Amino acid sequence: MHELSLATEVIELAQREAGKRGLTVIEEILIEVGDLSGVEADAFESALGLIVKGSILEGAEIKILRTPGKAKCSGCNSEFDMSQRMATCPGCGSFPSEFSGGEEFRVVSLLAG
Amino acid sequence: MVKWRNGEIPLNIDILSENNRLAERNRGYFEGRQVVCLNLVSSPGSGKTTILEKTIASMIARRKIFVIEGDQQTARDAERIEKSGAPAIQINTGSGCHLDANMIQLALKKMEVTAGSVLFIENVGNLVCPAMFDLGEEKRVVVISVTEGDDKPLKYPYMFQSSHLCIINKTDLLPYVDFNVETVMANARQINPTLEFLLMSAKTGEGMKQWVEWVEGLKD
Image (tube, rainbow over all chains, first blue to last red):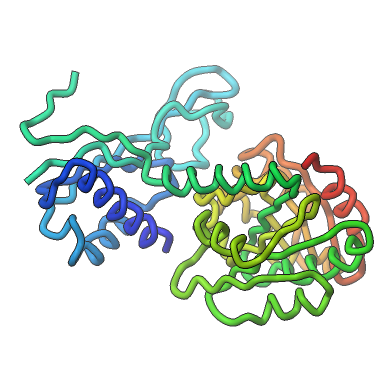
């Protein structure tokens, strides 16, 4: 359940960034969770919802942006969609050589209240 | 072009950036003191603590060794390690399922790791969560025992992808279990083509010499 400690990281990050800008209320936070990031987006969202009370994010709307995984095939070089880490190229069945999307796990923006 | 609303503050900050920053600080600390730091990860019960006890016994005459032990509860592992002759510090993560870079930094303030030594970090037994948290180690070592399934790399790809060496432990039990060494290696290589392997039985001592050579061969 590392989603809980990741949620704590988000609160600390939001508190730091709000502090730098003198914000006391955050209306909305947008968080990007890639399909290949190793973070279970639903578990993360629930964890964050559970611990926001008393923090700068209490009352803020939490928006999660899911980014699909994309990979380059090590066999035929084509790009394909990848929803999980162990997927293989639908064309030739090879494993990917690199990921070109879906590894993101970041706070995209805050909306000041 | 993204159009930002009034009051919207674009950040694009990686959520693990604070952990990564602290991990880089730890890495700098280790480099400055020529300390080789290894992060040992595995499922619970793969034999990490026994491997460390035997490793300490074979290396301690030549090299100073320190150990950071991570567990949810108890100081049992640190006590076992200290009995084998290396200073150890226990971190209890409580409800937490992994060590993070900040915990290592705090442990380093309590335990003076001398220059030129080897620091082993035994992470919490868990193949999922520790994968995401860089501690500042030089190499990550994943331990799998032959009583586990040989499809484990496919089930927990992140850990095998982020590791440098895979120790296959408890090889003395191979005649009694349906564990195929070639299969586990092939599965792990699909995820991480550069992963190295080492067959070991911490109990009988098989592979211990190669392991100690691997550790001692690392540039600090």
